[in-house]
Amino acid sequence: MAVELELQIATTTKTLPHPAQVREWISVALWQRIDTAELTVRIVDEEEIAALNQQYRNKKGPTNVLSFPYEPFPGIASRLLGDIVICAPVVEEEAKAQNKLLLAHWAHMVVHGALHLLGYDHENCQDADIMENLETEILIQLGFLPPYGDTVES
Image 1: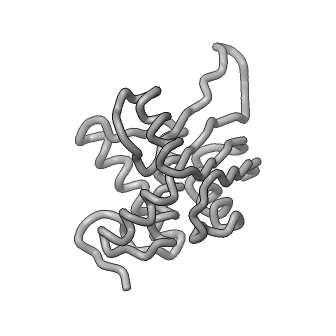
Image 2 (image 1 turned 90 degrees about the vertical axis):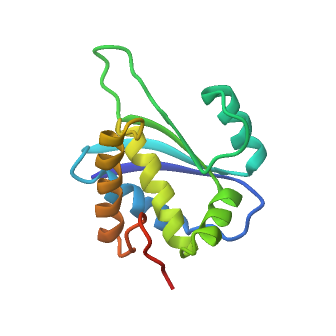
């Protein structure tokens, strides 16, 4: 698996995962699903993600992660998967509120965004079950507890 990752840091938050961790999480999420990939992970503050959320999803306010899959013209092969935008302050707030390790929640958001780039979604119960099962499998593979349910990390 060859991953070309551009990591953009556009936040004032200091508690971010190491770039090598982000690369590992992306690689494991994509492993066995795609051979090569190019993507960008951009870590932002609330203002930027709220603007993107409003513009592309017509939803007000910040969210944790947005994915923007690249759609090539028909018949054109491309390694480009797209972009993942993650809001650092929201990830921190959610980890605290859900009593999860911050690093585990970061891994979950990266994996979640990567699966969206591959076409997975959670728009209905069946699709959500598929995506959540994949996220759980990947996060366990990475050494984290399952992200859903009543499991509390210490």
